[in-house]
Amino acid sequence: MKKTAINILFLVLTLSCFAQKKYYVKPDGIPGLSGNSWSWATNDLREAVEKAVAGDIVYVAAGTYYGGFVMKEGVTVMGGYTANRDNPTERNNVMDTTDPAKQSILDGKGEQRVLTQYAPFTVPTTWEGFVIQNGNPSVEFKIGNVIYSTTGDAKIAGILYKYDSATGAGMMFSVEESGKQWGGYEEAISGLPVDGTKESAGTDLAGLAHSETILSVLGDHSPDFSQEDYPLNGNYAAYWCDTLTTGGYTDWYLPSAGELQEVYDAGVKAQLKNLGKNVTEGYWTSSHAGNALAWAYYFNSGYLHPALKYVRHTAGAIHPFTTPEQPDGIYFAGGGVFLSGNGILENCIVKNNTSTSRGGGVYVGRGGNLVNCLVEGNEAPEGKEIYYETPTGIPPVKNTDFRIYPNPVKSGAQITIDLNSDKVAVDYQLVNAAGVTVMKGKWGTNENTLTVPVQKGIYILSLHSGTKNYKSKIIIN
Image (tube, rainbow, N blue to C red; front, side, top):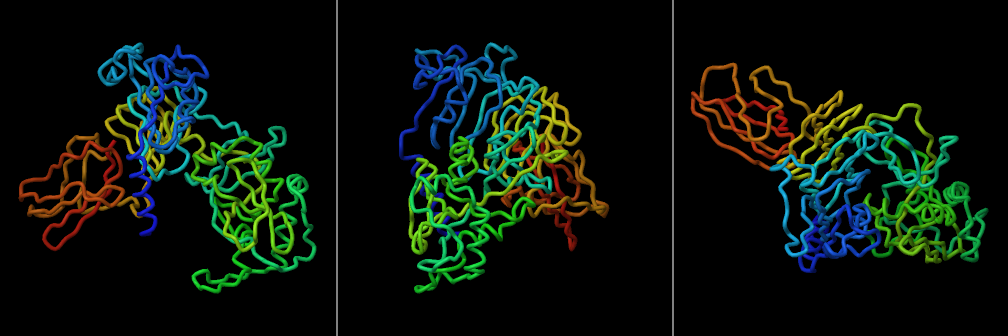
């Protein structure tokens, strides 16, 4: 945990120390331009976001931009600019105007979700100053789609890299990964063919058969890597894949070199990066290069290279996929916006979006945030405007000893608390989904109201009155 905290701090300091790049987008921009000024603005918002890296800012001029957009970690995207070359920072406040000509509008055309954050981010990432409208998530499985857990929650199992729309069958690459040895260093593995050249390895598609052979020989060795002289076999890539259970899927296996070549050729590297996979590291394949070597694949360059089996590389698994008869509601959640951890939507108007499951306007996953947004005129069976996924550790709380109303409550509005007991002094504390106390204080015997924060989300209100303690969930939207 300490090492993780240091790494995050280093990343934040790194982003702040280097000059951020700025990209400019306007409706009448020219495709393919650098986008480094309003004079050289591109008209392709997706391309600008993809080109940017963590710490960069994308400025978006007023106008309408169609299609589904994907948030990229650490890339801030800001709308409402006038594209004034003499005053590049001139900007309209989306909340102060109803004139579409002065707004940056992201429009789903009633065919798809407008803005999606597929996976939680480490670095908080903001889209700010937009009108988000006419989103309506549809499910058409194709290469590059994320595949959610079969249990119906927001957990992502993998990325679809191979798919036949006629049969509904395909293959997915796991989101989960782990640093492992290949295993079996200088150990003969009977029955496992040797791919002696890069060309033969690159056409090897027998990952499942290879994995079964490796497992039959190496078994389930699990050395203690904290020991200085740990064994060079065991707790290895193929075993990790075989024992992986994620998203309700079991029976994953270590892909062969040719199968990872298929992942690369599918053109899903950007999606893998957006899902948090470190594509700069080598990934083990199940393709054998001899008793001491196995083939490793490098997604950054599409390069195969033999590596010593006791070296630590990344293990990622693959699994067959079959289109479900009825996709779960999570595929349709968030008509306008789907947020996950550290995804922030700020100063936006979200309107006229539709979901057939949860969150007509916005689906807010664990750790996502809405800041000063107007969400209205959206439709969904659950969470007509906003659906907040219940954070881990904060289950719904029912308590007949007191009543809170209104609940849900509008941000910055007032709630009333009626205790079913004699009027006494009460200590109160309001804690957000991250476990941070945002308000605390004491009421006198005749007080029972509280003005809630403007920050939307799920909170826990704790009350202490004499010898009694009370607790309830509050939803602020």
